[in-house]
Length: 295
Image (tube, rainbow, N blue to C red; front, side, top):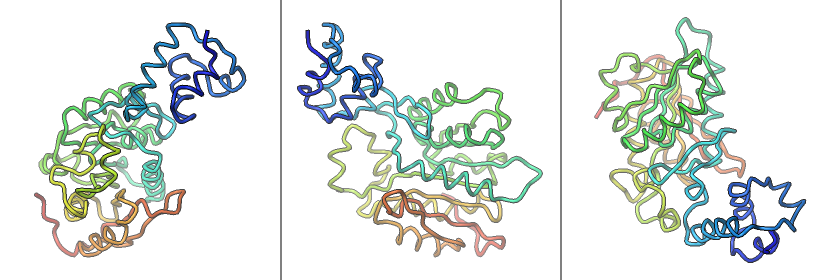
């Protein structure tokens, strides 16, 4: 009978990936795996682990193999219709919560719009962390919205003060123009497609939806969707509201310039744990310099 330690050495996987598969397949925590490397693998367990390992060796992300990914302390269901939530994106949630908490007390509930919600990770994380905040989430993909809605139902208290998340199928702001409850938000967050057409990293991301990586209209810079959002978001924010954009590691200056050109104030970037400018924030002014164009 094969021992756990022997399989770990022979499976051909990164040790962390192997441990995650063992935890999912056998219910053994990393601590238990380390404490009992001699643990015998039954024939059925060994067969299951080998099938999972073969998928990972072929390049399929572990999150898709297991059908789930942890994000902001919550476990989200994921599949090929949605981008896998990244740890870097937790910074976007933290920035949103910080700015919501810093806003002055208001008579009406605070509200957030999540653009391109995908699995719903950002929207659900905010709604889970701030029960009184009203959350809206849009995505152009019906399949992605189905995943997001399932995650929201599973992870959120149905009795939360802010109510259920409002999910809308929309190409960015298009379907929100005549939707009065969503006409003015306190904060808009987005992790839009920003990978440039032809980026060499796309090969390693082949299992993930191209729509979430390069967008409907791939561009050489990857900035097209960021540009659209920067130009249109002000029409959907309350005066003094915040726009928070995640972007590529080398796009902070370009995104900041887009926002400044559109009349945004207090434009600044926030670094992730690696010291990379990952999120750019901007405030919509009290006096609007010009009316944003929608479309």
